[in-house]
Image (cartoon, rainbow, N blue to C red):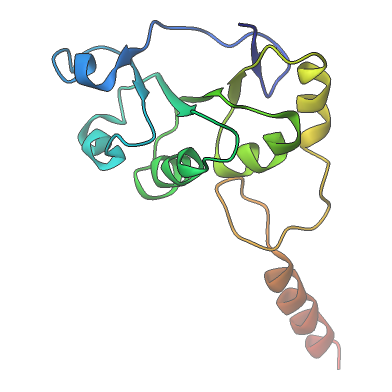
Length: 150
């Protein structure tokens, strides 16, 4: 299955062990989690993991979004975060916002969809791990600027 990353090239790749196998080899740099695996168990190890693969068993199952948010936001994971399984082109912008930066997909045109996904929405409403300011914060900043000019 082809690999894509946000920068447009091929991501560095590691063999990701299943969570059960990885627990036997905690020094291994890559782990693949099912959406039922406990992300919090990775907390002491996120600083040395290079790749975490999160599975979407079907496109309508969004638990891997929550796992990604926990990994990036609460646990501070900065390595490669890959989405695999039911990864659809129209969900890529949301996956990027949650912190995914590489994808496995055999869909035709997926690379082009990934390139467009970053600019698909000019305004966002929820804070996520991509660092973009939500609309509510932008409005507040605008009000403060207007108030300071009076």
